[in-house]
Length: 369
Image (cartoon, rainbow, N blue to C red; front, side, top):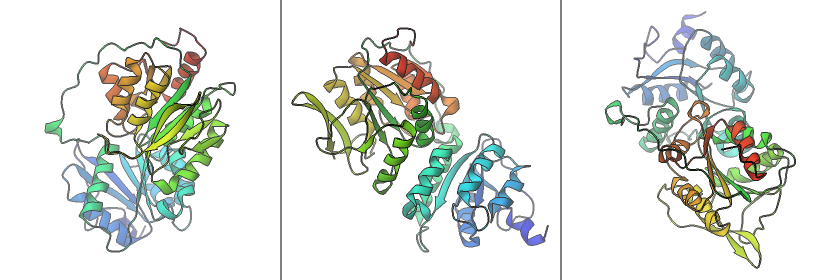
């Protein structure tokens, strides 16, 4: 191994591997651009709770490093010489067991297909690699926030509240006639697992709000259609909610539901919501609770923040069922955690198990609770 290659594996200007503290998030950068690796390293190493432990200019080099090094978060470029990031992703996830991958690539805008494939395969989140001059403080703040969320450090140690015992779960009283799923960071992989587990005979309509940029949505709908093996469309004004149909919130507005001349249809809303998200899960859940009189199965998958919590509360209050992904299988246990700690989740389980429970609830079985 040459001296140049040895140095490139480490943070710039460091001769030996950094030793992150027990509370430090260990970050690896995989990008064929020396400039990008250097900029990311400088952004991240300024933070006391983050540490660049390795850099690699190719996926092959990264795989070699991961055989002997622990990392928490991997920043991955998709477009590299040799083995591309998409091809390398499953291998990276296997070697870096427990690490989360943040796709940082120019392809996140122009190549939605590749980026969404990476998210479906297990990458937790995505972020655009800006053009030269775009690595500003706003970009840095967004990058650090995502790294901390994926590394489990959303708050400084001194600000973390002690765990609070969750109330006893609230059981549903009404059989669902529609399924609604909310997800964010890490949610696309979880959603893929959930949809592939739903039985072919399952005929309830499925509504999905996933936090994604607007230009990703048509590709996302095609991927959902494949995973669910049923028709998937983007919601618009008056889109009919029909059996075996998947309806997805578009990127530019919230999906809401109403009864119109004897049938359920979607509408779009653009008001500000507490979470700041657009589309937001809360309007979908709350409008469904009213339109379906509580006959709703609301599912919250991996994601940052608390979007969906207030809407889920309305579903539960109307007699509906709320399901949450468990902490062990979440990239970020934020949205599912909020409903779990409020005691409104009927069940907290991995995505595949949630699919089984939802199918059982829809069939009228009482044993799922």
